[in-house]
Image (tube, rainbow over all chains, first blue to last red; front, side, top):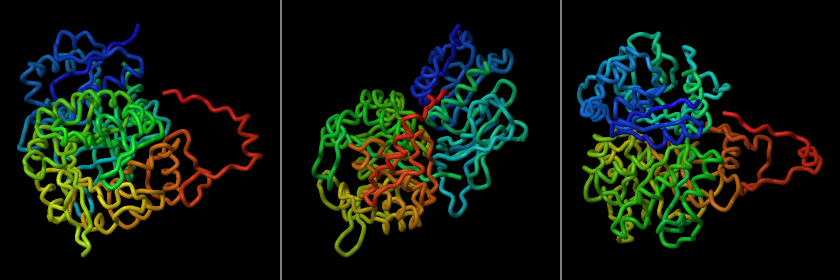
Length: 206
Length: 290
């Protein structure tokens, strides 16, 4: 039977292209903001393009936070956060003021430090360095070129939760992992075949 | 290592992709979604879809058009044309766009880019500046609605847009649009020294040499071209192969990488010798499994 994936719809983010990518890999996908529907899925995806505060407000308005805590922390449903979706796992973010996050992976979201010669946002194709193996990287076959587009980055409190880093300035977190919770700073849905390989790795692991 | 991006500017006029020459003449190419599909297969790094008829027709780039194109787009898609309101941006992002480009509306209202950045993040906002070089060698912002220079300094304007929270700046040369003589290197060098956000060059690309010179002499993060990518099979990966040969840091992941091929000085592929072509008949190419 085909596995069923649910993309969490919370009003920000490009849900469309994530859906297209997963359908291409031959999985059933729904986009929903209803906890009962999300609950039935085999895995969840939290996409995101947008600003931190707006995203957290939208989750709150849709009464999703308690429901997600239950699914992800208690039932241990596999979850992949993409870009802002990953940053929401943090304790808090300093994007346009200080805002509380979901607090699933201990750490803070900070602006990429302005150094001479370093342009912010970090936009473009960059190589990731895998630090802790994760099923996400199983099918990459030595390719590790992904599309990044972000001005803020996740600073993990516990180094063990860092799955991959990317060489930009002093080095930024590119992927996080804690139990069933996976997150990537880059956009696998926009990283051509390499991105599809990463998504397939995650989907095969559920 | 962050790579230099090679982007395609898809100029759309009344729902057709066109080649544009000097912001005046237009040659029809075909349907946008077909162009998007091929550019993807050929390994483009980013697509920027600009609807140049939108502002004149008092509409904005169509969300339907964007969603049709996004279906075939596995790389970032920036869209623009006639956007004046946050709701339009939201609608376009939901239709599959990854970034929003703003151009003429910024002339009267720079707050639009700040408001967009607050809602969607600054990484989502691309400011487009069309510019001309005056006889005295100054660079001035061009207003395509009046067809004249607005007299504003490009560098000052770029700095203002950075202040207003633009995530990237795309600078398009009007003089070089469609003339294949290379990029306006001097301007890009100056702008890169004055802003800290990524700068994208567009206008004048004719062959690989132009990209090589641009990357060598400036700090631009991306170079875009429009016309040269049309009407030639594998135009993107053949261009990239020539850049890789000159040790440029470019993403090259297409199966056809043209690694050991020879090109003439116009960038056209030279014929292989007969013995090699004969052997090619017996090489089995496996289909890629994701």
